[in-house]
Amino acid sequence: MFDFTLHSPVQELHYSGFKSSTIKIFVKRDDLIHPYISGNKGRKLTYLLKDAEQKGYKNIVTFGGAYSNHLIATACAGALFGFKTTGFVRGEKTEPLNDTLFLCTQFGMQLIYVDRDTYRNKKNVFETHFSQTTHYLISEGGEHALAVNGVAELVTELDNHFTHIFCACGTGTTLAGIAKGVHQHKLKTAVEGVAVLKGADFLHQTIQNYTHENGYKLHLDFHEGGYAKTTTELLAFMVHFQKETGILLDPVYTGKLFFAFSKLIQTKYFPIGSSILLIHTGGLLGTLGMKDKF
Ligand SMILES: *Cc1c(COP(=O)(O)O)cnc(C)c1O
Image 1 (spheres, rainbow, N blue to C red):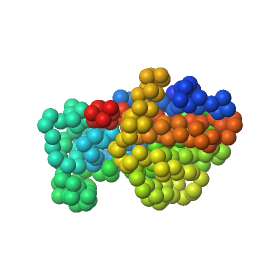
Image 2 (cartoon, rainbow, N blue to C red):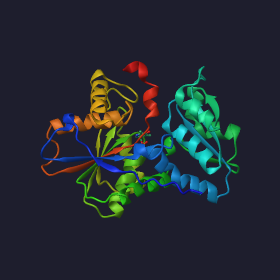
Image 3 (cartoon, rainbow, N blue to C red):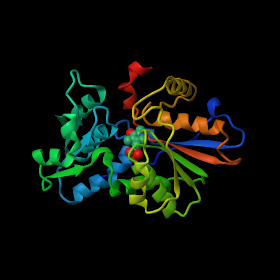
């Protein structure tokens, strides 16, 4: 049932904006795993869906914003693996539906709109509609210990040694998974995350809850104004990068990761001989919700 091969390619990146003769740069193309069960969202869902199946659930319920990569991944994976899915959407219903929510409904997901205040108490929202005995609850963004284990498998796919692995951080689950994988394989790789939210100190708590170690590093100053906020510099960087490499980014996560990376190179952050792996965590539908920013 869950024969969903996630092995994504690692490609060397030659981009003029990252030009450096002293380091090598690679991208793990998790964006190529699947168009909708994208990147880290697919990895996070693998063991959660297995768990739901083993416990005999037929229904999956989860939460997300109107542009949530997690909602669309859950909708598509649910359809693929035979679950009925329901998504609680933060905020009012819009007509017409945006691209993300439209695709969620195409995969059969039932959408229930919840105003922002009510949405905050997710346990309450869930319990007013469903019961834990019949409906398997997946938290917003897929944050869970099982999701961390799913992401950790990314590390088993790596054939070469990297001095650094970089990823974007929302909830920190993905970084926790990579740190866990690196630890399990006893690798000497620095695991570093770029926070996409402002004031993201809370990430330390989340990551340490799941990994019980602190062999990782967070960059908290590359959020470009906060979650889903953009700057002209960020957008200009993305357009230049995409045009030259043929790799699409999104302004919320991977755009900020790659932009932060370009700034770190400029400050000569990386020692000579570094071999750096950037994780492209997918989520490209998000860009379609931000067309008017470009
Ligand atoms: C959700 C998401 C992230 C953030 O992952 P966390 O595990 O919540 O830190 C990063 N990149 C993309 C493209 C995402 O959709």
